[in-house]
Length: 207
Ligand code: ADP
Ligand code: MG
Image 1 (cartoon, rainbow, N blue to C red):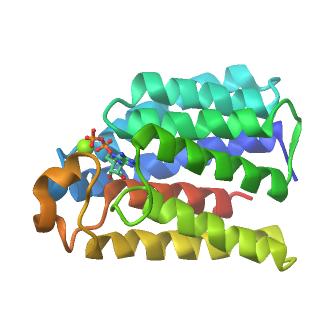
Image 2 (image 1 turned 120 degrees about the vertical axis):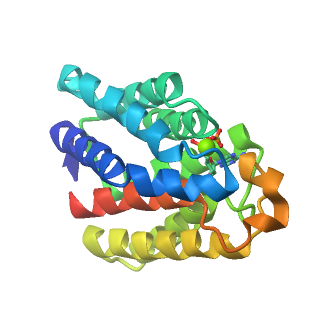
């Protein structure tokens, strides 16, 4: 169970993780994109970080919605609207609550994934962030259904997320900028799948 203070702390940790891996994420975006993914996300989470102190008394749904709106207006690129939508959907599903359970988190993530699919007109196996998000969600749902504790659930999710990110090397991108390079993108790991894996790692490490 996370209360809103803890949610804010986890969001701070996500921002720190994005900042720490900014260069690597941007490097991944070089051969198949325009070398800005880490820079884009770091700008967005920097803005989020500035607004989090003002959200100390907000309910958890509102916090996530505000994070999403901040990301939409500051990240830019394809990933801004997509991550923004993900956090906004998460907030709508979580709703006006002061406590977030694992079940609530997974339901929220499920609608975040749906939001990315709709907004991006995309699905799995297209070498995008969804190739990390979907396997991570499935693994966490399975672990939770098995009655595993939250730490174990998150560990399963992170493992599946990184495996999914790795798998994007074997995929020809059909969405976003990476689709322009076609088969030349083979062997390159998708930046968005990688950033999502760092986000989930930050959640796991700060539970
Ligand atoms: P841009 O491609 O506009 O420069 P970024 O570099 O910030 O934006 O983000 C690129 C990432 O966005 C990709 O690595 C991919 O994971 C994700 N992405 C791009 N288009 C889509 C889409 N249609 N659906 C899902 N994810 C996408
Ligand atoms: Mg880019």
